[in-house]
Amino acid sequence: MFGKRSYGVIAVGILLVMTLFLLLFGSRLFTDIEEEAHITQENRIVVGVSQLGSESGWRTANTESVQNAFTQQNGYFLIFHNARQKQENQLKAIRSFISQRVDYIIFSPVVETGWETVLQEAKEAGIPVILMDRKVDVEDESLYVTCVGSDFEEEGEKAGHWLEGELVRQNRSSQSVNIVILAGTEGSSSQIGRSAGFATVADRHGNWNILEEKCAEFTSTKGKEVMKTFLRRYPDIDVVVSQNDDMTFGAIEAIKESGRTVGVNGDIMIISYDALGDALEMVADGAINVDIECNPNQGEYLLEVIDMLEAEEPIEKRYYVEEDVFTIENVTEEVLNGRTY
Image 1: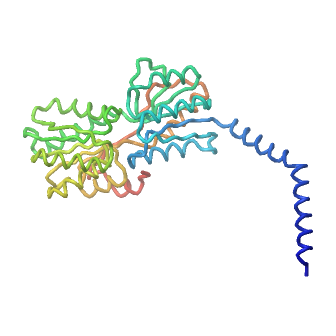
Image 2 (image 1 turned 90 degrees about the vertical axis):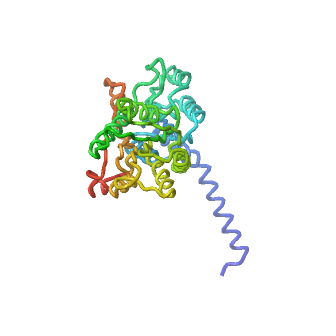
Image 3 (image 1 turned 180 degrees about the vertical axis):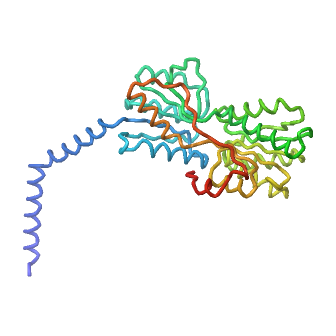
């Protein structure tokens, strides 16, 4: 049995050996690790992404699509930033990307205006900027190289065309129709486009009465709040146009709590946008009449664009993702089971 003195001698010996090892090899060990990390990052394409927020299920799916695309396995180093729906946070993030000398900047703008200065800074730094999901309103379109996302105005027109056809099917095309609109974040591309597209169709029908369009911020909570206001203000609502599924969920809650019914066999027709999995379940059940798809799986498109830029191939100024229109007739089990968001 060793005594306390023996244990102390052994401990001191081990400590001396470890110290000697670190003195001889330690600096080389840490240098190798640093060099390997530097080389690994140098061999990858560095992409800075500023996501506008996490306000909805759609946005979460969009973020996952981007993160799954720009992986180490695909040759990328991703720097990701969540702006929490504030433009000032995005401006800071983009300037941080510029100072870090990333290879590409991708961002989904909260609103369309107010980007000229920071985009000019990126251009002067020689960093290509790609818009994701939404557009910017700038005089000089050379400030960004391309935009990957949805054609929001076409989405709005799709909603209007569906309502035209449905009213004909119900023999109501000549009757007065009262419509309220739950709009997304004011000044965002999706809000501007969907409102304009729907208005293009609505303007052709003198019997379509748009009672009010009000911002509900793309969230379920705000959607419910605004819908409650509409129900108190307008007793004869026929159609609710909700510019994303999260607002639709809140609006349907408010309508049901008021004692009215929704959907295919209900008092109020529901037109929604996004086509999230949970919303398509409600389409299949008849609670939502139609859902205009907005495809969040944009990562693969962005990856392809950067591959083209790396190969110095010509690219277009706009790339639109593929999207569909869903009603109870075409939401099958296969569609529901195959949904990734």
